[in-house]
Length: 176
View 1 (cartoon, rainbow, N blue to C red):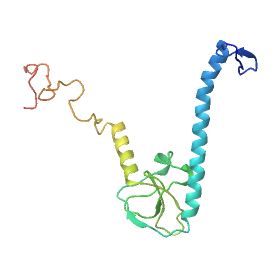
View 2 (tube, rainbow, N blue to C red):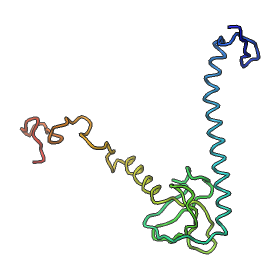
View 3 (tube, rainbow, N blue to C red):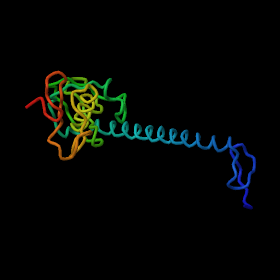
View 4 (cartoon, rainbow, N blue to C red):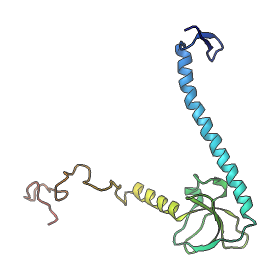
């Protein structure tokens, strides 16, 4: 233990021996460091996104699509590569897609005079948004994967319900 290392306060301590306060500050420093790293990565992604957006201005249209649903960028565009450049659209509008930015976002614009170029959610992203909002609203049951539902025995014929006062026995389904 002859090595000496400085702690955060600048005091020299034998290597491996840290005061409680410096240990606590290093643990909280780790979470602060990870937040700083995440913020730096987000800013780098946004910088790259804006660069790609500027480059797409001069590119030709790759393809056009007609929308089946509407998309509100103020509600669902916060996770876009550049949240300030997300295109909202209504159902049955035409979109010009210039390029694919990533699997979740495309670069394109609405087919209208003066419509700005921006980020448009891909069909996979729209499906994920639809699934998440339907699950939050309770319209779709959560997907549990193959196998029995939670609380169901593996070899049982399915869920059984008993309605009190109707004379049915436990184990008999009321939907037969």
